[in-house]
Length: 123
Image (cartoon, rainbow, N blue to C red; front, side):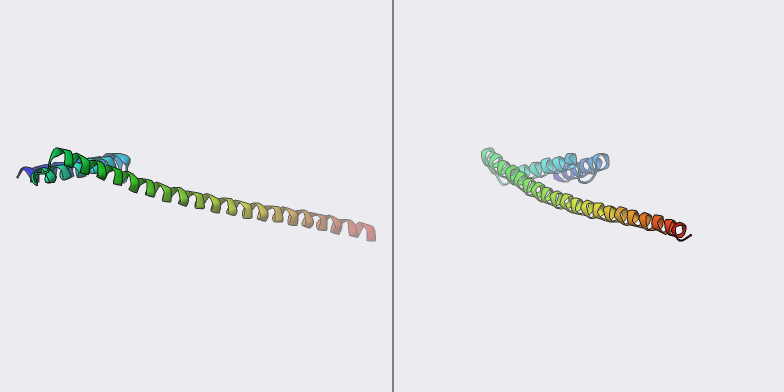
């Protein structure tokens, strides 16, 4: 009964944090990690593990979470770099299009100007 009550309390706390901060917020992720540690502690204590071993398991778990976060951050940085490169390439293309358009516009104006001058020369 006590375990079920604790589980419900964890779910309520998590739901409240999601409502307050958003599903993928740092606060919610921290709460999930804390809850996972608490559940792990309780299960290992039930199995008779010594606190020293439980602390070591928690430390390994923390290190693994940090490593996974570092991998995720590196992937996000690579994605951001690729997106920035793509945006630079698109901006370069747009500048070329504008320059081409401006050059075309200048040629069109010169042609129109010459066309206006010709009838005067013929007269």
